Length: 329
Image (tube, rainbow, N blue to C red; front, side, top):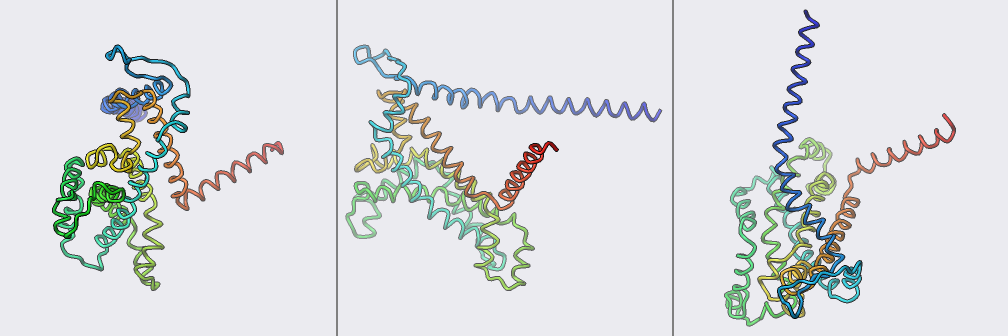
């Protein structure tokens, strides 16, 4: 009887597992369908069309001419276009906004999570920091364009007649300031979550040993924040490479000497305008690989000590197995 009851329980558990597994697949299936339709398929087609030219016929405007050109679009991107200049613009705008953003976010995250400071009003401050992230980038860009116009309130307050939107560095500073304002709150929340996940016993033990707040930050907080910092760096880098709406709304066509003309702006003009859509596809593929390479470098650079030790152990074990196999053991 005992054997029969245990067998029945085993069958019932097996049936439940199968049932739960089936419903799990059903629940996540819509996501994969949507991803395949709206993300994966366009990605594959972008790779495919990057080997063609696609432009409007000058005589029959409604007709599009498609011609296979192989790797000509990629060669053109590096030899007969301003793509490298646009990449430079994109990186400058991203770095100008990201460096102060990460520094200020680290400062605020350290303050808000430090119990010893006993700061008041941190809840209100967190809301104020995160509020710009909830607003549309287009609205903030239009607001800054009005504030920093030649006859705008900023020049009136400072008593100057500086044309921010006509100066190269003025445009860069405005775009970077908007990115800084919009994403500092989000980065602060992420870093706060990382700091709050660190074991408080580490700080208590270091304080007993006489470590200062600065030493705790350098020796405990920063090493333990590597996973969150890696996430922030990669997501910020991807967002920076895809920068489009803010510079496009502040100044038209990149402003003076096209200093705010980004890669995605050039891709968008190639797709929506009368440009070569195949060349725009090649630029998109290049942007994809650039983001992937930078992401891989960041992953390698930000690798934790535990991961490095684990990788070394795996290499050592693999070498030992090869040595034993060579000896015939």
